[in-house]
Length: 274
Image (cartoon, rainbow, N blue to C red; front, top):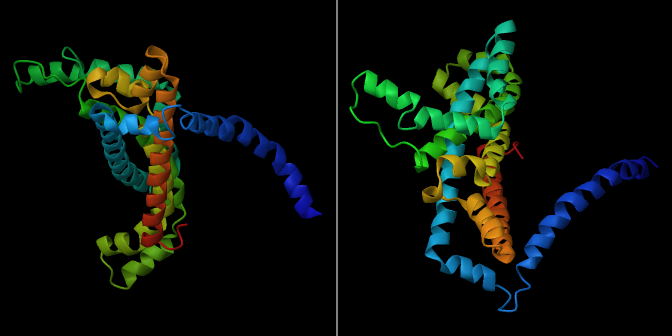
């Protein structure tokens, strides 16, 4: 009876997920295999193009670098926040969450003001005598990565704070009392216990950066095209719906593969993490 009640309660949510998530994705992927030219013709055309391969590699590179830097900054920040006592901890969490209250487009435009030739950073460098001419910082791969890290570090911090808070102080004190150095305590106690949170945060950052459109379009332009902007171009400019569906299907496959690899790494670092 309890099992039937559980199925009854979960059925509406399951149907909503299937209708609004599974079926559209499945229809998008199936459409790529219905081309008259052949079963895998859209995929062969995609990978036969050096330009499209370079876009895929650039997107993957930006996403992996963004994920790595976000994990590094987010972990260090979350550890400091988790060890901060009382009201100050709440203030630090609010400060970390505050950027999320602003839209992605607004935050991306802010980086246009900061990194532009007449922007804040160039004006500062000129004023202190570092350079006489402004640097070209916009429309580069690094400008996209910097903005993406800024966008996703708050997610990483929020994901890790709760995990690090739940690590008992007794374990850290016991490690120190047994003669472990702070580095050894971090490596053998804190890091393995934080692996589940790191993987969850890394997955969120990678999927968000890999599928991002607004930030790469504003800060990267045509010279730093990524999969999201390429898909938009194929669908809304060239009206090539099969080509856009092919790009979407490749993005889904790459995301799933990377998530599975992250899960496997997590299982090696901490068998209890998955």
